[in-house]
Length: 433
Image (cartoon, rainbow, N blue to C red; front, side, top):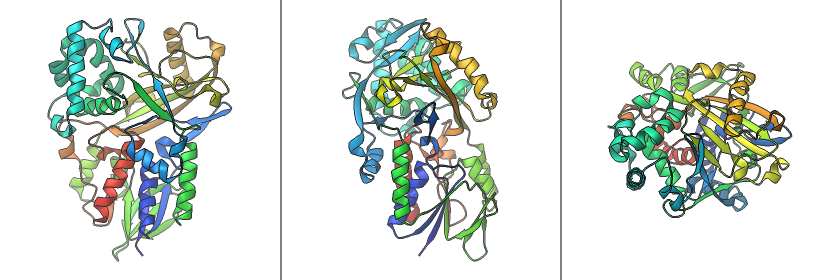
């Protein structure tokens, strides 16, 4: 029986472990944190449990729904129509259906036509690698025009990418449009999102129970710090707590630069390619409020002067009864992994974020804030620079038996739970072949 070591216990690592166990393999997961789940993990906010980062399920998320079906949880999904808003020129606007799109005041009629054409064209492109040779700014100016680019696309690019948008290919906006377009039942008419009561906490719990039944060994609080050959064709995982275990094959699901540091045995050119991959991270504040803010699930902010990307009002989708009638809000800020914002304390982030939220919603008072916590993930998704797919090392490394697969290998999508599961399934098929 082949033994496999999986480094990283996020959704991707759990899915890979599950499929290997189904093949009759002996599998061990090494997770540095106290809990499995990675970016889909949960925590306590005030008196309630919630996801550390915001997640929704789309009707088109077939890989997520398939895993949930295996776990017996797909039947628990609640589907709701949602609304999207924009905060532009100090005003809130809804852009949740065709009529609102056509009457969106910040854009002229020709701008709206070209914006709709941009979204329609991007939704029809099947492979985003076709757009890797063009800068996203140039591509959006070409298709949407200068006015739409300056008023709509540029603020959104800066919010999502910071100044890194200068180096980003058009494949980024293609992947974003593809996912959000899929959320609509019919073109630009209606959004329909799904959620699980309790968030991903019950998913991780049931998934962990399944892995235990499949005899997968789960080692939490085990930070892997080196992968080395044993000399007999096997490999050893060494953990910072002194544990050492040997396996036939090892799959690392950690970010590429981190994986490169763990594997001294890789070729220098390969390690260099892995270390050069630039990641964007997220600083995500979770707020529990006494009252709702708006009717929008997501409010995109195109005005300058706000420290967060947008406002995700989770309880515009999730029933507030799960939070004692209170409102759950996420305020994300995307930044490069070395950004100084990652060093800010929770209190410093609150001092920046909450006053800005009150500027957006003047009726909000200090005593409306019941809880405020900050989650930081500095390696969420790789920046899709020009010709990115050609620069990315393959899943199979230069050392037979060592594999590296992570969100950097998501080429035709954005970093989310569905794409993580999809990547796990497809990468494992490649590995087993």
